[in-house]
Image (cartoon, rainbow, N blue to C red; front, top):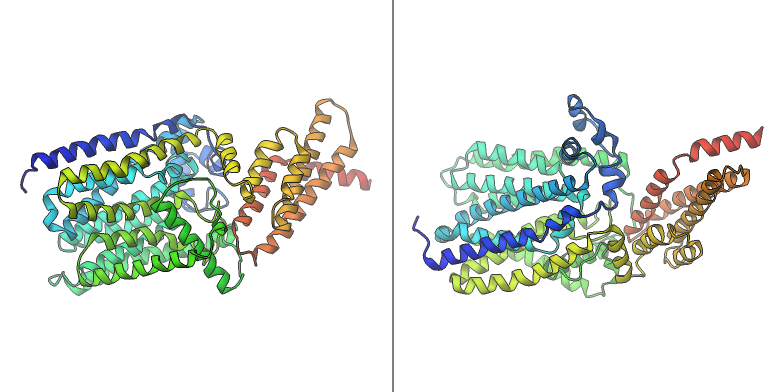
Length: 540
């Protein structure tokens, strides 16, 4: 291999400096508060990850550590964090940043292997192009949510293992398809699948890699090729069975049958929203209301599907990087299009794009490689990196305080139901603004959701009044009865609300109901005891 000339060395140095600066943009997350699911059911209130002795670690493989997901590898990292850092949030954020750094290293290796495999003429510059790709991958603003949110570590882990699986396979394809690489790639894919269920979609990228190299490997036995193809699919089938059964038992899988046209319309809106966030990551937010899109979403999603078909057609004719990037970008979205509905934070989220950003970067690397001149690549790299870096820095500041994040979300879209819920639960109710909270709850367009949120306001008010009576040591049977009645009414409203989800087109309403239910479980833990005692006393 020839030594790099001065221009390529300058590009390498520039890229290295940009990479360091880009990663430093994420360092403030070390001092951030915990947010939402961090404290509720993933880590700090999870007895299994907090208290399980090391001799019982095998239990992570036998049952879920929380009642929503079976992700033993992710949960093991939480367990390890508690052993290393205790209850210190900085330790958990540090682990997230460590996984983010590992994902960047894995992506660097993947890009380098793909350049060597698909563009051998660029072999001398493969490392420099991979470094440029890593800069663009790290600085992308959509990664803030995954890196800054402890509960989103599953996205970091699944992405890291998926990149390592693809890089291992690509290296094997360059070396004559050795069985060891295929087996190792399958094992890494298995790790991705049980870091996050969406990791299963990365089998599509591995399959495309194999298909693109199939006819060029004339000296490789057909049996070895078939085995390399079947191994990752066998892993995904096993993972899919486990996740599907777990989803049915935990409730993360939803019964939803609104009709084929509504499902297709929903998928098109989600596809368009994710594509927009990937290509133009501004403005970013915690929630994205896909139903604010006009009917132009059909054109956007249709063009996206045509682009995927063009990418597949191109790979049938010749080897190229950009088609691989298109497939890597779009493949993870399949599980988010809600053809098989499941409960989700919102219909579209930046963390859903963690692997997709890598696909976009592959397309950009193909462009940079074709430019070929470092003195032209550097300005292009700066034109892409600097604006994204500014947005990333601004978005990182949003995540510093949970209250600030929710407040800005409500300012950004005050009519979105999940933003309204957060405004009520985290701002109005703590300030005892019950009338304002009830009035705001009634603005939600779905009657069943408005009723559930209104019932939550009433239950919180009754709970506070009862607690105030206990503090003053004034026994008030009426307060106990009111508390029991309001909490019972809340449970009834939630049960009624879930019956509407079967025909609901916007599944983020399911998240609204589940978050209210989860909040009630932690808030009103004494409800069964108090209300059973009250009932028994009244009967006596």
